Image 1 (tube, rainbow, N blue to C red):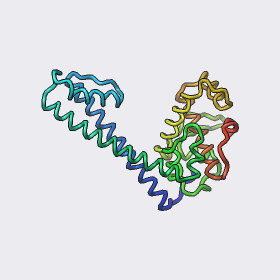
Image 2: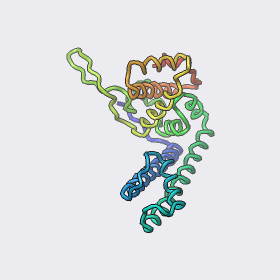
Image 3: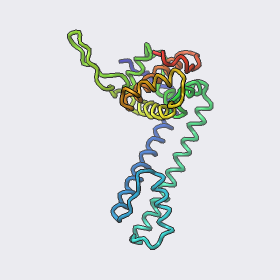
Image 4: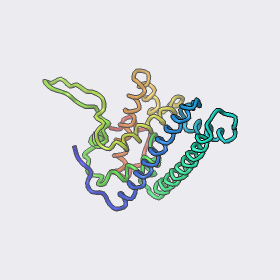
Length: 239
């Protein structure tokens, strides 16, 4: 396993933006879960979706005849204001990330890969200090924990699920991006989409998403270590 060396001040600054944004998103998730739980205790069940919760909180102020304690109603108003403040702060950090993305040529080249957007591209640039730290794309994917664990002996190769080692944040971004990309390949006829379509017919969707994330990581390493421009027609054969 090869490890990424010390990062530059610019990379640490970009990582700081990502880490603060991640903490704010986690705070919002905890707040949403708490509000749903409190409302559920009073007989108001809100379906899982932050949009449903926002509409439910907005409706509490308009519908005064609900069987809801006045104190709880006031508390929900305070939590609604807190949620609005978190939304605004997250939007601000998203704006910072988009600005970093627009000002970086390599980020824009990475962003052309299906499944890699501004957040993932800037996180990759911030995490990979020296581009020569990895011998090939597989080493980079292994550092991200996107390759199978091996328990091989006696000439018999045994492969298990992905190792999940390395940078969890980058691995999560790549897998979520791969899932989003899979939802847009149904009616496409390019080689990459056909490859994904055939894999989806015989493997679980989660396996396909991880396989695509692995491939995207290797493509990203190739783009990071060269001045090449992403070519989707060659991505199926990318190692």
